[in-house]
Length: 259
Ligand SMILES: O=C(N[C@H]1CCCN(c2cc(-c3ccncc3)n[nH]2)C1)c1cc2ccccc2[nH]1
Image (cartoon, rainbow, N blue to C red; front, side):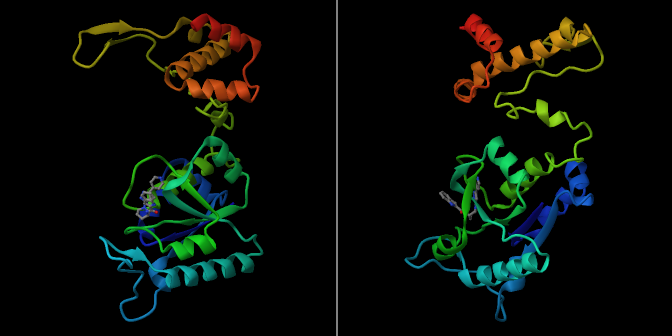
């Protein structure tokens, strides 16, 4: 799959392509990232990509023409590669909240054009004419759309076949089954650790079931931990999983025991 990224700061994306899981996705071409520096498509001596807002007010607005020229170049590149015309995604607090379900849908798609805004935003006429979807990472305002774009690319890249060492890993991810993740433990089996920073060290062990080697019991414990943590922190996710018919009778019996 392919991401065509429209950005004023292509240098922000280099680290994504050079470390960890996403590096493997990039090197194996499981995810093909094409960066499109918007300023390359601005004309005039000053190659302007922004200007003052009509109606006055603070800051600057991203101009339509450079965006139109950049998108036309992307469309030509997509056509030359024989690829599909990919949807344009704008990252904005006004967008639809990103969910793992949406990530999984994108991961299974041919890709998208990721539009990273800056300044005060993008001329609405470009959004109305060319943006297919607006995605929000949360109710806060950033300085640009690049970090949301990197977040989405990371979430999609790790789902690509062959990218995670253990293909089953993302099956146990938080949200992959609509619930929060269970706790994880590793060596040493027992270690002196204060219950909270600054407290007296106490010998802290690992839940015995995880040392039992009984895989069915371990799987059940992990599922019950997910249910308990999700009920406590994000009860709405329990209701949504129930709505989707994803809670077993065992799950429901366990949850009833908690309430
Ligand atoms: O598109 C916007 N801003 C551009 C330009 C300024 C920096 N940008 C941005 C994107 C985001 C963002 C994107 C996704 N999830 C959370 C925040 N914060 N800031 C991109 C934008 C900013 C904004 C604020 C309130 C309601 C709607 C809004 N849209």
